[in-house]
Image (cartoon, rainbow, N blue to C red; front, side):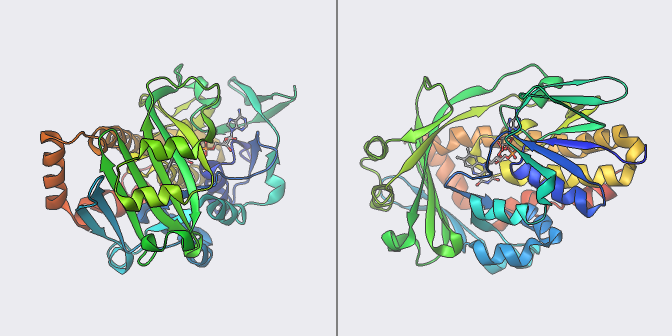
Length: 396
Ligand SMILES: Cc1cc2nc3c(=O)[nH]c(=O)nc-3n(C[C@H](O)[C@H](O)[C@H](O)COP(=O)(O)OP(=O)(O)OC[C@H]3O[C@@H](n4cnc5c(N)ncnc54)[C@H](O)[C@@H]3O)c2cc1C
């Protein structure tokens, strides 16, 4: 096999990073994306050192430093009086310790940065995958327009509602009981939140809010959860009603209510999860990112893990050579599964601890938060170098 024909489904963070990382190794791929245009939700994303170090190596150091914000700290506070529960220093301390920054970035800025690394003629827009089939010789993408694309390897980067994942497991996304409102506010409207750039979280009974600056500090992105037992909307995302959001957070600390009041528009998302799986490939199909391991956003690691996946899979394919793609997929799963399953589990656990009602459990959580404050608790997560682990902890 002279060339490996790699077809990627989905041009989200996972698909774009994979295409860029693969290109660095000299292997080309084609991306098939259902959206007619590549746009991103008006929201931010936190990108931690475990992923920024990989993006820097791909050539995005300067570009990201121009559009992202490097917060000085992560602060956790109480919902009513705003009392500080924990402060984790970031900024220069994080950079020195982990050799890479912690960034908060507008999703559109991250997407534009990633797109700059992928040749435009490798991204096919408005192309929806309907099904995948495969045999010993090749895999085939059956597209919604009736055409078929043949490939040696199909990489499913098609998100939580993945079609490609059906080749590996028959499951469906499970509604978590939580919705999240997301909004962006011009920084000048919330001066009390921008004097020092921080990731701010407020925890309260059944709810929490997270906010941080993006767009080089010009905007503040926030997410605010609201539990709803049934999600009856047909879609998993909808326009949110800012008045409903304000009502849900009535009585919270004024930093929260003033932030919510400053938003002209909010979107609303139903948070879904899936059980962890014990393999990431089947025959000529492999999954990365949310298609492989959707995560509740309470560890802020879904995109970070998608970036790690993409870089590791590209590395494995390059190291194995075109004829040994099967060995590459096995090695990818061996490296990735323990880590992503652990982070999925921690994300679910945070859904419970963030939302504890006031009482014994909450007091225990808050005492523990003060004890564990500091960067040490993030060592396992931020110091992890996915490329280094791939090349040193085993062979293909
Ligand atoms: C509220 C919220 C906050 C979050 N905050 C953070 C954070 O701070 N840090 C972090 O690391 N993570 C965060 N995450 C998680 C992160 O957003 C996701 O893990 C990440 O975007 C997943 O990227 P992906 O490329 O795997 O999937 P997606 O972004 O879902 O991309 C999948 C792509 O595939 C395309 N596609 C789907 N089906 C098909 C098909 N049949 N044919 C063709 N194309 C298809 C889609 O159109 C899409 O472009 C958050 C998530 C939420 C909901």
